Length: 333
Ligand code: GDD
Image (cartoon, rainbow, N blue to C red; front, side):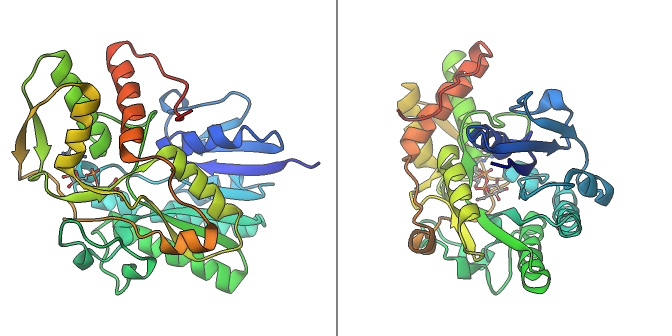
């Protein structure tokens, strides 16, 4: 059987790395991996793949890496948690070049299908002003009022995919990720999201016998968080489906940040006082996913509870912080 040539963009990142790891299990896949980071900074790298360190904002680079490619999965963008996206709006918006040039190049090189990773930041901010809101349905992205900077790029790029499909018959698939977390991701340095940041802070407090951690906002803001393995399964289910609608890939288990800290404290066996920093980036007041549409069309829903996913994430960050070794197993079984 002929091998499928699959290009993974952003392969050196958190989600991209886990996707490569997953796709490698199918020996009929021939993987081509691209990321802007020098290879020594990729979260996961596999020598059997073709690995390229290059800037996909450049059309010439997109043309080069999409040659002879059947499928493109685009996870590449300049992003992070609230601490990064609130302070780097222009950088976030420049990722529009990655998606635009990949679509143009993919069309020219006659790829068969294109996947775009959008975000819950595409949702209308005025529908996220309360804590414990009803889950966001895919239609709640309109009328458009997404997260400034990052969210506008995501919403615009979603539509670009839709129009490449409608006008040029390029098959596209799009999902909106809701705060994906897990091992082998960023847990320090400024781009980390709340689950990793709060695991790190509690581990640090426990190791160094500190009584208090800093928490951004008043801790009452709510979110849902999706474990990486569920994210990869949702991604592939949507990619392999016949549906070109935009789908939520998120969890419906909505918690406040204070509640999440409570779960991490139980995992750590260590309690902390919270120093609420009201001037830090907070994002929307409440956000969660409504999975009705993806359940009905794709038959996908998460397998991991927040507690299960946090335990695996906490253990990995703990091992990184204490002896720098990677745990190779991140599944429940
Ligand atoms: N990052 C971080 N670090 N957030 C903290 C911390 C901390 O130490 N303490 C409290 N928080 C709060 C933030 O203020 C925010 O209200 C909430 O935890 C969630 O923050 P993040 O996890 O950083 O981001 P987000 O959920 O607002 O948005 C993330 O997910 C989106 C998809 O759902 C970002 O990664 C976006 O880029 C992404 O699109």
